[in-house]
Amino acid sequence: MTVVPFENLSLQKQCPVCGNNIGPSHRRFKLQKDPDVWMLKCSKCNLGTCEYIPSDNFLSGLYDPDHYAASLTSNLKLSNKLASNISNKCSFLFSSKQKISILDYGGGNGALCNALMLDLRSRYKNIKFESVVVDVYNSLDYEDISFLSVEEFDNASDKFDIVIASAVLEHLTNPKKILDKLIYLLNTDGVFYARTPYEIPLVKLNIGYKTSWPIHLHDMGPDFWEFIGNNYKDQIDFIQSKTSVIETSIMNRPIRTSIAFLLKIPSLIETSFIKNNISYNGVIWGLVGGWEVIFKKIR
Ligand SMILES: [Zn+2]
Image 1 (cartoon, rainbow, N blue to C red):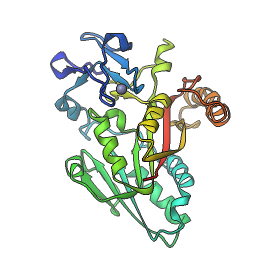
Image 2 (image 1 turned 90 degrees about the horizontal axis):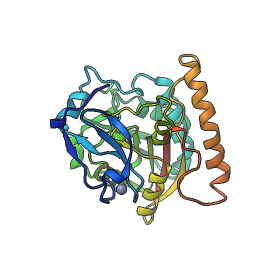
Image 3 (image 1 turned 45 degrees about the vertical axis):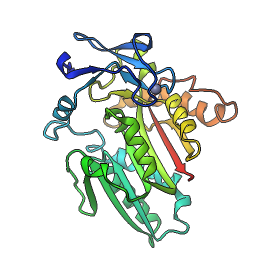
């Protein structure tokens, strides 16, 4: 496990999403020892976040493409599964459009963006699709996807019909700034998709489950996304908020995949049948590891 040295850490006194004061009373479990860094949980927006944030320099070293490959980049089946779910949930977009633009923030080599375009092109033959991947390094494997660096993205103002933030918000030192911008860049009726880790309940079981610190700086589960839904309620409407798809396959990782499947069933029952009928904050069954949301921009 990577231990971040003290000189590369700075204390987070305020929650990086809602600005609420955070400190030792919000501690949940230790992310690393010597120097100790705890996972905190904000009592206002429910963001799980690290007590000390690593410096930008330290983080860019971690993401050097020579030794870092996002799991999605190497998992085509997962990309196809995610793409098909996004396509199914945004069919309302296509009734009057001739052109659909897609932004994939933190899209790596473009695998998910490409899978989504292939899926949509096979369903909507008369619509033109254009897409842009934003990332720190250009590692795109697909010629028909454009690239924008994170620095260029700061000045981007073109709007998009579909915005993807798959497994990326948890890596950012400034998740609120990026989330605000991604929502701003959505056209009215546009669709936003995010997939984030929701691991605090699993780690707290003390059965050896670990988060991906310092690659993951935050934990964003259903209660966090409910806060976001309320915070942006004039702008967005939720289409889906449920446990994320299983990342491994039964062929490659049979035991891990079976356990993940069994743990996700109670959550799917809860979000599909129970929570829809009785509204309450967060979820009762939290042993799922990841969360997935889709919402629509209403104005
Ligand atoms: Zn907060």
